[in-house]
Length: 160
Image 1 (cartoon, rainbow, N blue to C red):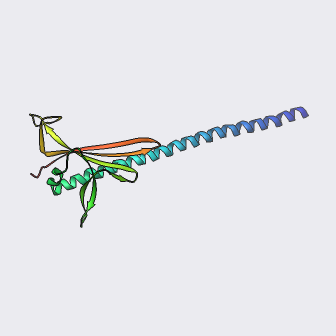
Image 2 (cartoon, one colour):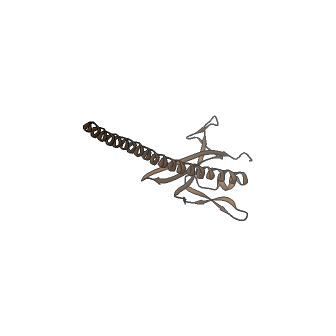
Image 3 (cartoon, rainbow, N blue to C red):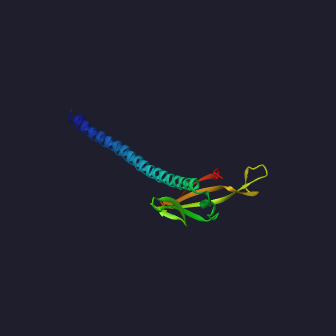
C-alpha cells in the first residue's frame, strides 16, 4: 500500500510539471503574437501618417490651383517642392526642395501633361498648358528598411 501512495505522489508532480510546461508554451506563443501585433500596428500607423501627409500635399496644390493657376504654371516641372503655409492669413505655397516632417521626407513633383491627337493624356505629344500632374511622395525608414508611398493626381485649369 505504501508503494502505491508514493507512486501517486510522483505522478502528481509530473502532471504539475507538464501543466506548467504547456502553460509556458501557450504564454510564450501569446507574447510572440502580441509582439507581432504591436509591430504591425506601428507599421500601419506610419503608413496612415504617410498617406495623410501625401493627401495634404495634394489638397494644398488644389487650394493653390483654385486661387491662382498661374502660380502652379510658374513652378518648374520635374523639380522637387514641398508645401508650406505663408502670409496672413496663412495660405499654401510651395517651396523648392524636399521637407522632413515627423520622420518623413516629403516631396511634391509637378509634371507636364501631354495630349495626343485625340486630346487624350499620353506619354508624348503636345504639352497641355492647362493640365498638370502632381505626385506627392513620402519616404521613411522603418526597422532598417526604406519605405515609400506616392499619390498622384491630375489638375486642370477649368477657370480659364
